[in-house]
Amino acid sequence: MGAVNGTARVDRLYGKKVAVLGFARQGKALARWLPTVGARVLVSDSRSPEQLASEMAAFPDVEFVLGGHPESLLTGVDVLCLSGGVPLDLPIVQAAIRQRIPLTNDAQMFIERSPAPVVGITGSAGKTTTTTLTGEIFKRAGRTTWVGGNIGDVLLDVLPQIEPAHTVVMELSSFQLELMTSSPHTAAVLNLTPNHLDRHETMDNYIRAKAQIVLHQKPDDVAVLGLDDEGSRGLADGVPGGLAWFSAHTMVPDGAFLAGQRLLVAGRASANGDTRVVCDRDTVPLRGDHNILNALAACAICGVNGVEPEVMAATIRDFKAVPHRLEVVRVVNGVTYINDSIATAPERVVAALHSFTEPVVLLAGGKDKKLPWEEMMRLARSCCRHIVAFGAAGDLVADVAQKVGAEAGWVTRVETLEQAVAAAAAHAQAGDVVLLSPGGTSYDAYVDFAARGEHFRALVMQL
Image 1 (cartoon, rainbow, N blue to C red):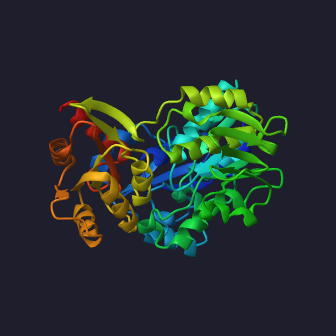
Image 2 (cartoon, rainbow, N blue to C red; image 1 turned 135 degrees about the horizontal axis):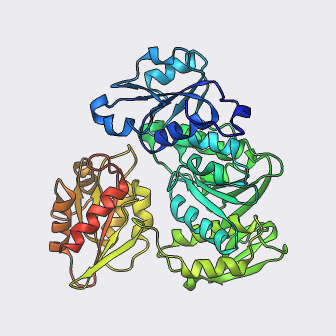
Image 3 (cartoon, rainbow, N blue to C red; image 1 turned 60 degrees about the vertical axis):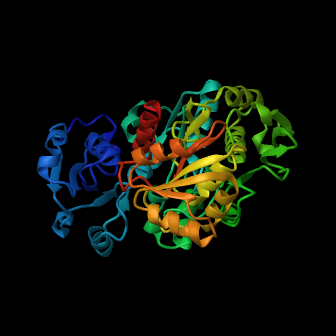
């Protein structure tokens, strides 16, 4: 067993056998951390011993069951930890449920043990931008701030370094939240629109997973909800503690809102309880109305945690787009190439298209998540010069274009992103935007959306 620190013996996992399903980023963090609290660790992954030989060497205290997840691995197991990519309908997970073995994940374990207050942020779109901006505002306010969760660091890796006076900002996905039985001290739900229905199957299941971020809060905790979004707004009745809002259309008594061309905070989100100006809208450097909402959400979150508006304004003014989110890659022959690889749902493509007044050549495709494409395609007909459909969902994109009445030749069908960039360059004219905003996941060809975005960048740099 690995070295046990001085407080390990008080942890409820001391001496317990903990099985971890999946040996990627989250699974490895669990395999590093669990021995430090005295747990006996078993890792199960569908890959073979040969595929993981080099990675296993760094975990001499961990038992491995590889090549699948046999039900026998549950023998003697006290807790089963799921990595984010492991669905609840996996046979081994269902067997654990039947055997009444508790399920958990790295995010749940961290929230239960963090000595510092945790800010949790979720939503169907905008999580990473809002989480990153929120973290930067806290840092500018002089607070030692840890940012991670579904992005960046797996926070269990830095748990021993976190102190009560620090602040933790976590991005949380529906995959992480569906197992939650503890909620962050400040919990923000940006929006709830169809997403990940290939995993959750129904919108009700998806909303139920997201709602866990607020349902387990305590009376002195605060939820921050998006007033303009029906799904987020609908969670208000289940909030056990305080409630603040953000809105681009309505003045709110507690939270952040847009009035004319100014971002303001009010009530519990204002350091003195008054309504105060944060900044002018035109000082927000990010494109699109959706990013104004992201900035308002960050202001509401930081405001309810005592940050002054002047600090919010200075941070917003200096903030740069997070990679793969409407990221300007390069201008070639008067054509601007934009990387929005994070857009893994058609609804996110809609937000991206609304961010441009220039004609757009859109690269759409990837792997479908069983989401509706018609609204996006109708909008695309009004603002896109051309669509290049690529990847596993390419035929779907082309079929939907035809269904909404697109003329012949408006969609070019290719297989790979490399072919898509070449086709887009051929159709684009000076003054156009070539926009990678796929609407599907990357899993047909890439390990994640970031790898797809990096490849797009490289292809554009070669033009």
